[in-house]
Image 1 (tube, helix red, strand yellow):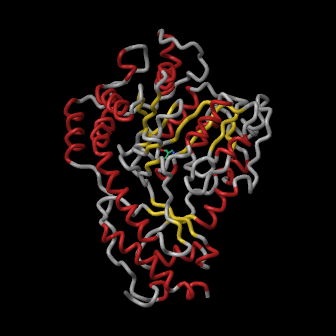
Image 2: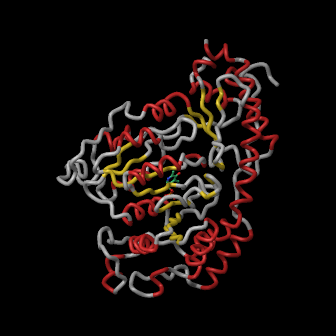
Image 3: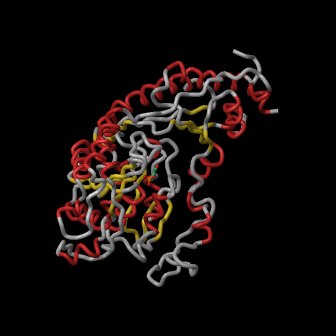
Length: 427
Ligand SMILES: *Cc1c(COP(=O)(O)O)cnc(C)c1O
């Protein structure tokens, strides 16, 4: 190993690029060709007709997904963003309502609330699970609170028991954003199947993918119907007789998945476990290598949880290592090891929330007459999320097949080398 940091002109720990994550194989190709040969690329219709439920591949993927995750219903969408929007709509959330969200997540985990003119209220997260902190959630509950959006970030389940208990006590509905966590479990059951509705993503960055796509699961028959109405022109379909007790939020869009994505999705679902196990093995190996390094905190895994490592996130204790996080990230990059800094800027600090411009230019839904609350998006409202974003968190996607233990060794060696030279980076 070179004794000089690559940042200062030394030989990097690694010159070879890491192999890409490729999961599309013969199974997916064959499935897509069958769809093309059939000539039926989608067969949804937006009316009260059997084809309201989609074509054979869409329905097959939904049956497979529901069976795999142990849910009564699975409803496919063209994205998880669409599935989250439909979930908020299905729960009849609307103007004047508040929904408690995590600030440290992909934007759609909170914009789904704005989509129905309701108000996202951000509660802080825990710095080990990265999920909503039950104490912080409790402090945000008001008479207007209707639901929680619980995110299973990076593939680790949020602490569901206390969150679900809070929801029960205050009569709140629960949406799980399990976009990053298919296959994660909490007390032996799949994350995404605890709330009223759980949402998974099949976008191209996720563990299994269809390019774009999403799936919502629920055990509730009426919620499943409402999800399907919002997916597919509910306003027209209810006129044809598909009755729901309440028309709230039944305006439907076209959020439908095509037969091609559904065919790919069924093949990908069959690979989920085979793609997840090596992620966990590589992650556990990397954790074993990093654990003894001072100031580096590898991901914690709660005793009752299965972490599926959508990404591998480490926290830095700056006071111990004495190097700013961004300096360490620069040094890792120079050694040939790609770690990203901070993940998401806490959502409430982003322009949409700071300027409160959503629908039109007159401040709706925040200034809408139905809203009686006073939500705050001030800096400092979620100190853990801000600290992770600004100073502590580094994450990488270099923790998945076809990487080998040898590849992971190069990551660990880069950390070791940099910490050996920490004094040079402090200067
Ligand atoms: C990817 C992701 C989404 C959105 O998924 P799309 O399928 O791209 O719409 C939502 N929430 C989280 C936490 C995600 O990581």
